[in-house]
Length: 236
Image (cartoon, rainbow, N blue to C red; front, side):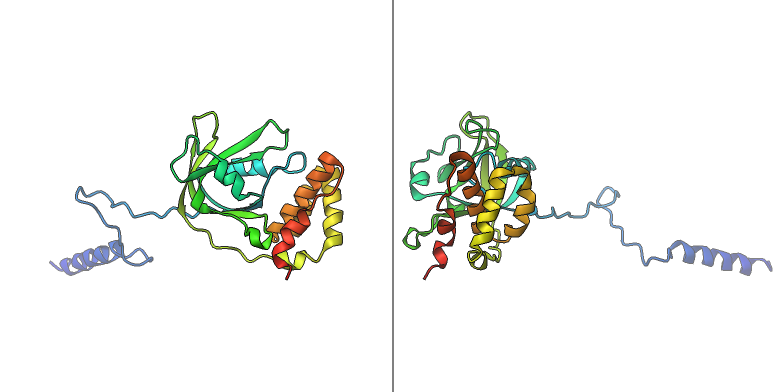
């Protein structure tokens, strides 16, 4: 009988240690079957793909980068584009829902190889013609479905908004010498793309102008008025 107190003490110690792991109380919950309950999960927001993109060929790999993003299924886009009202009004939404339009972009391999997106027209903000603004934006989060039709590669359905980013375009519009130098460099050396992009990436309008001008030099041997288009909204 004299050993009973020791056994009781040992049992008490075992119970205490069983409920004490050193990391706090066990908060595991179970469902009706006794299995651990599934905790709700939240899908991470996709990283915003910000790019200036257009009908450029030999000097611009951005279309291929866009396709890689679209292939992930859910995307957040902030694209600066050269799109006019006429293009939107005359584009038929083939294989897309009502209220949608088609946009198309060249790959850098050649003019017969291009990407076509069907997008909600509401996600496209057309530049203000009264301010001589020829640049537009496609901004938002989208679910993406590959299209089985021959006229459209992907159909985008808007699922949310992407806040407008702060840019340095107005300041960069004063860097004409750097603009000309980088456009000429990019026209002659497409491999310099990543290095040149670092300087202009926070200025999507001017980055569009650099690429458009490089394209014009490479394809036609002359400068375009792309810088004037990009900077028109900052002219009093």
